[in-house]
Length: 112
Image (cartoon, rainbow, N blue to C red; front, side):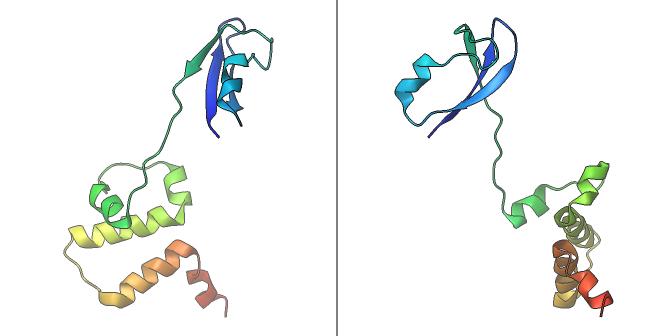
């Protein structure tokens, strides 16, 4: 069941359309002005990375925005990468602490 994105050449608005049958794709009309004068857009996509590849490709010297630090997974990634760069191996206990921080479970230890 593909989802296609379109831009209407009449009203210049963008919308997406889910098709249960590909034959319906030829009958699509603008959701806003009902025009058939449409251009199909290329959708954005993401590539899944493993934890190891994220760690390898992460640049700790690059400034990150506020949104980056609101995701606890990124804070753990930064800590792991920084320790690796500094040649610090704090053993499995540190890995456990970082993982608790990433999942939010670290607060459980302080709320007891």
